[in-house]
Image (cartoon, rainbow, N blue to C red; front, side, top):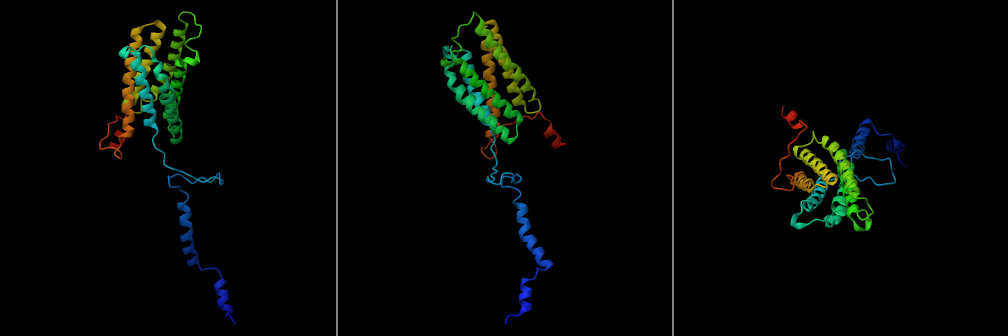
Length: 252
């Protein structure tokens, strides 16, 4: 017959030392699983869905380059390079590059928690889409029955709206970096000159707005390049000049 004492001992509660070993064996992995591989707290609010927390890339360079390339092309048309006087060729870029790509970058900036970048890229993405619609022949906006000077005034008001918006956004760059602040302030001046050109029918103002747009475009490209040419991807990096004072505080 089996030893009842031995059987009772086998079914008895484990000792305190054994409990401690079990706790160490099972609790520690549970604590580790509270943090996902991406470094985020584990979210179990929707148990029916798998939890995927991946490290997101930086959408800033996409937004900056999308804006810069489209601005550069349109600004080259505004200054009349190679005799170009109609900017309709830029419509495709307005919808695809300056519009869709920049709008997507703005939504991804929301995901990474950058409110300024999300607002800027999303807004300017919609700007380019709206601009493309104005010059899209099928929209009929430019061919409507306007009174003399009415279309120019309407376009001027349209540009003034973006001048005001850009001014507000430029104020938000004063603690960012020199290159980003420079981009927004030059862009703001470009909107103003283009608006004045519409109101006054001044070719000189249109041309000045075009040159300012080119400067803003190259400055935005520089900003984008600082996010692409990192130590992980390039043998050299571009300097970025901080305006927040955080670097000085760290040195002190």
